[in-house]
Amino acid sequence: MSLLVTGTKQVGQTIVNPTLSVRFYSEFLIQNSVNDQGIIAVGPRPANVPISTYLNDPKLIAPDRQGKVGISVDKTVGSHWVLRSYERSSVGISTYNSRVAQSLSAKDNRTITLNDSTSEQNIQTHYWINEAVGRLRTGPIGHTLLGGFELDREINPNYAKARPAALGAVTLDLYNPNYAALPPRVLGMDLSNNADGAYGGFYLQDQI
Image (cartoon, rainbow, N blue to C red):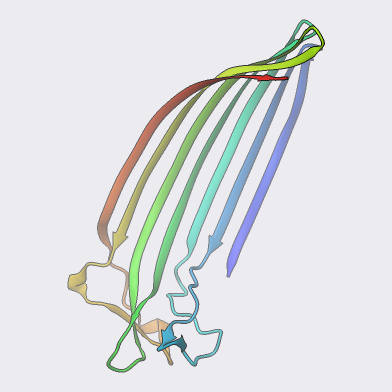
């Protein structure tokens, strides 16, 4: 089961004057879902259980939140050139929150060990692009020239947590899963990573 809400809003284009226009836009995503990786195999085939069997903790939700905003400015110069500048920023957080089936006991072929973990990815990006587009002719040949540069910044702090081995495994009965008997979640830091980068580049194109 999942809940998904999305939206895109173009606030509109403002014509400041005949040679200048400004455009704003926004976009958002709200999603709540559960992790369902299907039925575990017993031997070479899926286990003989109802297709509705859920081998996870139904109380756990995996939320996903994203939002984007941007602005672009177009300026006409003379009759042949357009200068364009636009900026786009986005932020988001996605959480993989699950107790999914990891292994099946070879002793009884019914006790499932769950991988009890969570990971969170945070996203923050900023893009600023400036370019010029012009049209000209050299004799019988027409040219569309494009040149510009781009500056980017990306910040992605991420972390993962897992159940400490000292607390023992979390298990479910494949043929009679009792979700109410699952122990409370106790997770410890397993991995932390903070990626932070800045980039830049330029480009030049002649379309003949």
